[in-house]
Image (cartoon, rainbow, N blue to C red; front, side):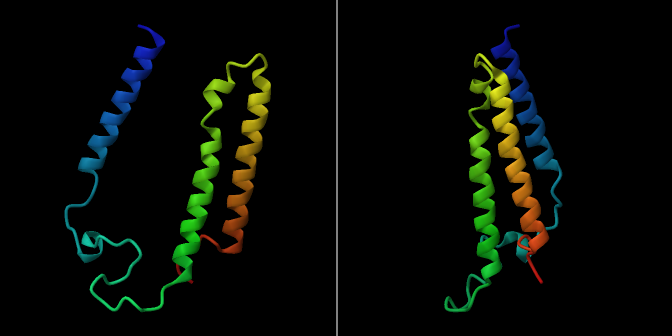
Length: 116
């Protein structure tokens, strides 16, 4: 079996397993919080001029920041085909170290705390 066919088969198998887990794992007793289409915790039928928590937007910005930095790792498979893959390993290590240090810093400063 070729490498492409085996990677496609592995990807399909992992996807199927994750779909099955996602179908059977959630609890079957929904409540109002789970059925609400809004993730910010606001009452969708209430006043639109209520003050909001800035913490929600700070956590969202941190998520976007780390998600964007993870996208820097996407060219890794093509970088492994260079004449010297040690440079690729060096740059990936630097990016992952920066992400880890940033996460540790945000965690130690309380930036990931949702409620105080």
